[in-house]
Length: 152
Image 1 (cartoon, rainbow, N blue to C red):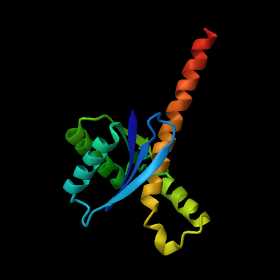
Image 2 (cartoon, rainbow, N blue to C red):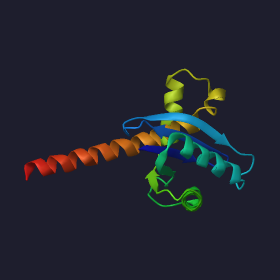
Image 3 (tube, helix red, strand yellow):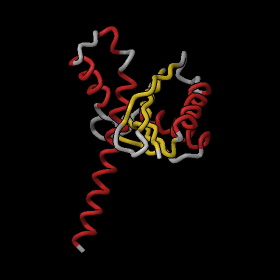
């Protein structure tokens, strides 16, 4: 079972996929579009990646504000989630993505990627952080459930 992680932006979608065991996230690509509302080709590309990687679940970043409120970008992500559900029929998990882009930029800076080149990688790296955060949380939840069963 593979999971696809998505970082939905105004003109890009960063894409990552899990390994078959659901332990690690790897970046695949950045889907780019000319206009924010031109989503048909973006959705078609995501559908192709779902088929190629045999994906069963999607994890979509939810860009909440730091005070936990939902702004315009979060609303657009929820609308994109609805489109994904209609197009793919797959479950879409919304995942809090606060600071993933900041962390992606920091990682690229520490790796020596020049400022003008970071935009070529930041969305894909943010998708990796979103998906890896989800995978780690799932693993921890399962470990806690398993530990609870052992105590009974």
